[in-house]
Amino acid sequence: MKLVIVRHAEPDYDLDVLTEKGRREAEYLSERLAEIVVKDCYVSPLGRARETAAMTLQKTGRTAVECEWLREFTAPIRRPDAPGRKTIPWDWLPQDWAEDERFYSPDRWFEHPAMQEGHVKEAYDWVIENFDALLERHGYRRNGRIYQAVHPNSDTILFFCHFGLECVLLSRLLNTSPMVLWHHTCALTSSVTTLVTEERREGTAIFRMSSFGDLSHLYAHGEPPSFAARFRECWTNKDERMD
Image 1: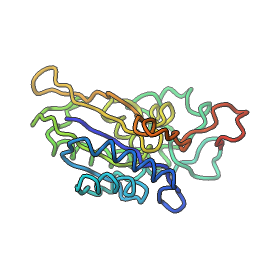
Image 2: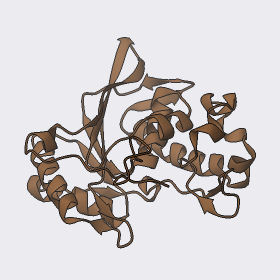
Image 3: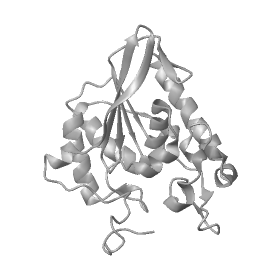
Image 4: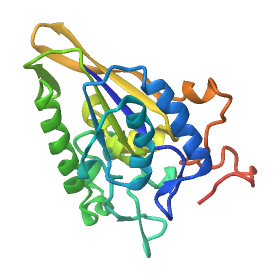
């Protein structure tokens, strides 16, 4: 089975819609996705994801199942350098988390007091429980850190969601800490990530990531990637985003 995870196109977060550039990204993305034979589509309930999906669905004459658990991951925490306000759990300064070995462990990343106070593990588990149930409906049952291929297949399942949420799904599939993915990867807007099951022995499968954050549909049209989700490449790049 193949999982195709799409981050929404460039958004206006205040209005929860796509920008003009985001609509171009979604259009180019739809041209690419329309060529894929898809078994089922799932979409976040948030406007920026639904608008991104709409162009592909219109081209293919398909519908998508709206899943509340595919909305952007939310579990506000008090970041150590700014304890007076709450923020998303993947927006920490590197110097404030990278030296804590717990964050690199798939079994301990949630032990930090800020994670405990924000009930981040509870929010994570809710997403994962729903994700595992969906995969089982499609033939793959979670068993420890691998999957039982109960009904093995070559279907393609398509998700339209968000970067933070995508990292949660990938952390489950790849058996790693979401903190590592939240801080060391950046799936740019309208990017496509693909994972495929590998069944080296009958009945036992894992998911292998064959591509992450692919933007070939933008490059094919000469559309530059959005800077959304990134911070300035160098501190002196004053025209790029900072905290």
